[in-house]
Amino acid sequence: MKRERIANICLVGSLLLAAVLLFFALRGCVAEPGTQFEIRVDGNLYGRYALGVERTVQVEDRLTVRVEQGRVYVTESNCPQGSCVRHAPISRVGERILCLPQRVEIRICGEGEPDFVLRASLTEAAHG
Amino acid sequence: MRPARNRARILSFALVLLLLVPFAAGCARTPERRSVTYFDLFDTQTEFTAYGLDREAFDKAARELHAELFRWHTLADPYHAYEGLVNLYAINERGEKTEFELEPELFSLFELGRTFYDESGGKLNVAMGSVLSLWHDCFKSGDRIPETEALEQAGGHIGFSSVSLDAQKRTIRIGDSGVRFDLGALTKGAAADAAGKLLSGLGVKDYALNLGGNVLVSGKKPGGNWAIGVQNPKGGILTRLSLCDISAVTSGDYQRCMTVDGRTYHHIIDPDTYAPASLYRSVTVLCASSALADALSTSLFCMEKTQGRTLAEKYGAEVLWVYADGHTERTEGFAAYEA
Image: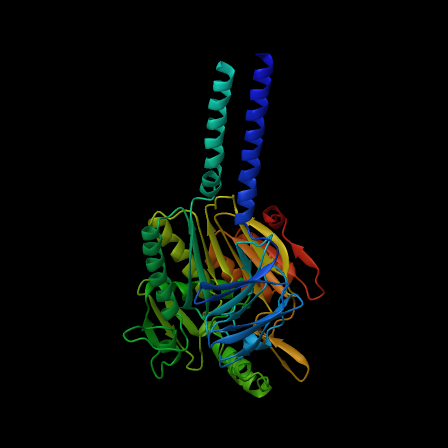
């Protein structure tokens, strides 16, 4: 009888442990693994891509994004001023390139990404 | 027999538990996060994020929020006229007219402008639109800077003393026909405060509003406080803040600049020199009021640190200064918000 009880306790114990591990494993899957970048068009997710894979992404007829050696930049754009093309390549979590006239945002995401990044306000430039 | 049956019962119970785990893992992520982005406000990207609202409540809040922000946008728009509305464009293109009755929001911006003109010793000057527009034209072309003569001529018409405000009649009178206004340093902050009032009236508690770098956070998200990164002017994130019920605004020299003859010029113009201010790379201000945080960040960007610190203290604001060589200084209270 005693041996049965010990066996039962072991069984329940290991199943509970499995449950706990599974819980965290599943939650882990929900979070973003590794570092990626995402492209948003009109505020909606257009695509999410690995930073480590070289590729060119044509974002509709708006602009062309290139990722190379973990750095993302805009190679061509249909916007009038082209400030997105002149923007330095981005590679670190929290950095982004915004093409306001075409409503396209490219941002690096991954572990440690904050809810928002405080950037110098652009419209003081309006002022500019 | 009995132990075997017992074990079977325990086993099936445990299996059911195990099957429920994936659902628990999913449910643990609620309340749901909802977010919307606007591109037609203040020449920047605006994001509104809230937790704990169903789709219908969120959409209603977002609609009313957009209407409120758009009103501020139109009132302070220096580039476009809107039918039936006395906005900043109408005031700047006033011709012979010298007096206007203003909408309450626009009047409050001018009042805030006057307060900070006095408080900052003229470093925040909403009446220097004529100087700013010269720089604005150059930033557009990107290949030249304004001529000294033109700047000095425009600089003869930036005195806020030629402006009188009557709070009772809500009117503005402008004595100098050469004065042009620019409210870019104040509008987003004041609009964010108004939006905050609107949202709390709608019962929205846990939200973040990001008006192109002018951030207002209320309540918390499921994991705790809101995590806000402060951009390093040299790239990446300089420091991380853990915030609730507060506004954070950065003024900096790195968002819009141009290079002419090997020299880089940025867009925050010092009213005393008519040239870009060069004391810091960025100044970040934390304050309960977004309007004050916005006004303070621009003021402090052009002020010596000691005077800036005194002004910030007066309004209970915390400050992070980033210098050109990368070193930083902060008020005592700022560090308490750093994660």
